[in-house]
Amino acid sequence: MNPLKKIAGYNLLAILFYSIVIRAASGTNRDATMTTLVFCALAVTAHVAICLFITIIKYVDKDKESGRAWLLSSGIVLLVGFSACLGSAAL
Image 1: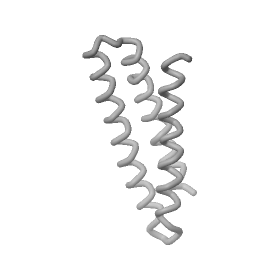
Image 2 (image 1 turned 180 degrees about the horizontal axis):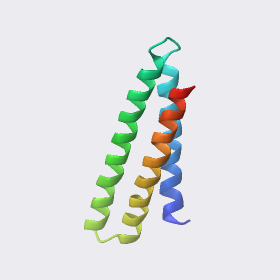
Image 3 (image 1 turned 30 degrees about the horizontal axis):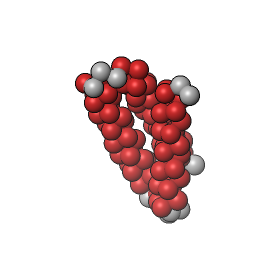
Image 4 (image 1 turned 90 degrees about the vertical axis):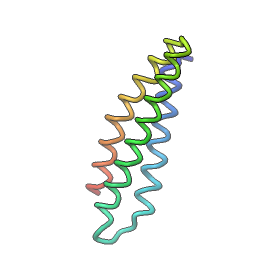
């Protein structure tokens, strides 16, 4: 299996999982929208930072194919994660 598909797939599943958990935990009160937005943005930021850290480690270890996959995956996580964050706040 292509490393990009595998890494991006697991990262997208992680976004789905923690977006659902944050949305369910924030409740349905009036402040839930801002709580969802803040916690989801923090989670996506941490996720992207971890992906970039792994990218640096892979490039230092001379594993360029895997490093490139992690770098592209961090971009996908950034785009999809913040879109999901804003989408869940709009619900």
